[in-house]
Length: 407
Image (cartoon, rainbow, N blue to C red; front, side, top):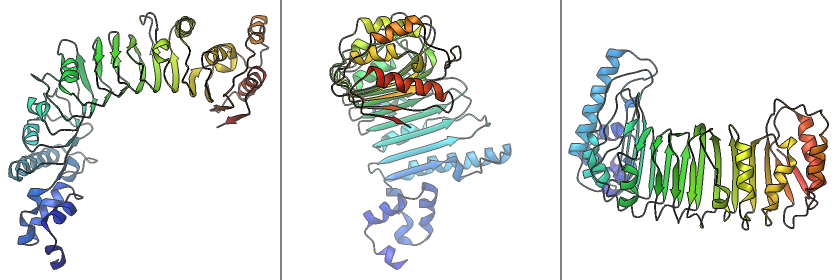
């Protein structure tokens, strides 16, 4: 213990930062040297799991533990020294438990000038986020994961986050009427990455002059959204629910695109491929009513993918449509690697012989590709004959292939 007491204050608080905050505060009883060390902690971590065993829910015990947790949280925030906070972590996620909580403590957190804030909440009540956290000049990363009975709506008077580089929103309702996205894009001059997950997107546009990475996972979309980000380099859209429409504009710097989208009947004209013509890595996974007809029309009007080196194609019955694959390849003269994810097609028997129309198309797709030498097939557990048929077609129609990898 004497050896620890001789450590400089900076080293001591750094060591304490690896503990959760409850454990760090408990060290105050060890000696006079340790009594106030916790008050300078650069990292604060609060979790309901440190106060109650959430695996065994007893309502009275849960209420008592949560009250202690809240009192401890506010006690620490009010007594911590006003030095800049590096990281704040708050976890209050309990399944099948319905008490209401408040996020007013975020005002206290904002006054400590945090660099990173992580919030993870599961509750039934709709939550209001205090405005002060959206005017925190020191904040570089903000992660809000909120699971509630209703989507949480963010309505700050203004957004002024001059240092924010990364924003992660989960379980948030984003509406044009609330103008949060518009305020965000204007009030975050260095925002580099935006991740939206399980959000309700009722917005017409995401427009940013500085955004470099945008990821949208499993969001419900109620209207067509235009993405206009001239500095965008990475775009990921992975939505199992049908989307109302995605339009891309100003994407000349886009290098990596991963699109897995369920196109609903109201999606309208696809108009995606032209906006992806500069990418070097492209993963396409589209499905839904009339998706193929929409994509073929889009393909007939698209420019050449002059920079494309790796292309992944997923969610299609590719074993039965080599013509469709090769037409994509014809737009990709610099392609080096092709990755295929053959999927099951229930209405086609792989034992069936191809029709005359299929044979005619296949005779017309023989071509050379200067750089394409490797094809990877992510083999499903079923329909081996269909995969074998795909391999034969690839060898027959793309003469430059040196190896086909089955993974």
